[in-house]
Length: 369
Image (cartoon, rainbow, N blue to C red):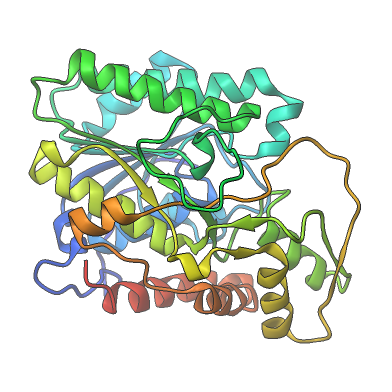
């Protein structure tokens, strides 16, 4: 993964309407930590298509195969190799990128992995966030910072109504708790160092994102795709668990909107939940049933008894704050989301980039951002 130039050649750049959120990113200098991950790859691709000067920072591919590698993003942007736990390496990335906007996605994001290696999880998710914030403190170019956390930052008492931004932060297991800590570090830096500086700072707490090109272990859609492509039954650990499932483009569109609005006016910074409408907060078995129906070929699933570590059973978000403040709303419901996942995963790998571009264009063309 060598350095490469941001590109706008040919017809790749999205055709955008006036006031569309994508217009805002044209020629902006954007740094994405965790660019080689699943969400990072989608966000990097969008930014390249929007005409931004895109810089990415990560410690390499977290999964194999890697969406980032398959669509050859290293040829469309500048990737800077480094470990978010190392302050000097993060400083180097800031020195090269001189970013105006920073999206912090670098994380150890798998709940089960956090039980296996909790120290690494805390180092990455807490110290990593601290290092990024310290570089922003020392920067004279950053005007907008979005720290991507999770819906799991809240103390989950299995309530049936969605969590609000003012609810208590205290994730239980190591992944969730480390993300709660990341929120607290961000809040401390914001109050201690950025109170009188015009830098917009937000944390965005997204639900469970689904999309093509996710190869992580212990995630529902990647597990489904691996099973059906191997012509095996899908194994589901907790079919009755309820989650706020949403398409990755809905989450990324919200991140981009928040970053834009606080760049324009730093007072728009804050804490924001991003998730589906309440009628799309569904049981895992419904998601898998939809997947099997849309995939065809006699795809099916079975429940696998699992005595693994604790994971919450019910989780939902109240997203009224971002809806009212920025007129945001999710665009794709759960059925459309699964349609798009199946569409992507049925493509030949050599056509992933074309499919990705098609879905990005479709999403933002219908968007009101």
